[in-house]
Image 1 (tube, helix red, strand yellow):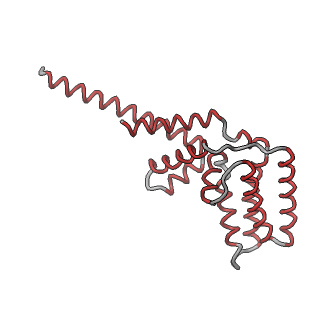
Image 2: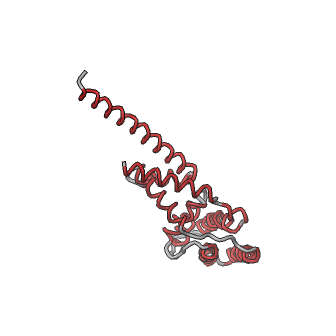
Image 3: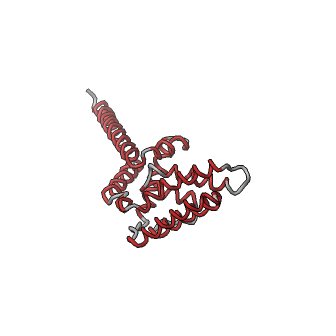
Length: 203
């Protein structure tokens, strides 16, 4: 058999192995992102032009999160915020619209105290989604209802729903378990996923 035939066979084998490795890395990346983000993964895929674009965006969130030093709340701060939430709930009876606005502001204050940047809502939601993927959609819905309450089309039930959505995130932010919402190991695994993606791009 001519030597050039063996060369072609060798190239074909290398290509086949590379394809298998690439597919395995892609499956590994997808699995890790699904485990990390849960329902937020499906939301990202549904809103992106492709699964690859969605996964790249989620990886970018992980990378940004690694640059943010999220701090635990002191017990005094935790108690103060819990008292603040009780006051907001009591306010809802007489001033639902004001209570929702104050709840929105209170959550931003808690986030800032914990170290999250709070300048832009969409970025806040993206940052929160890494640590709290199960409730970030509650935050988005609550915020949307809070914004709608500035007009005349809101109802008391809409505002009550906004409070419920906010409460879901508030609980996770102030509870002690929130301090371990994302572990160092999980962040490192995110780095592995990003590294795998980079290696695939280089190839």
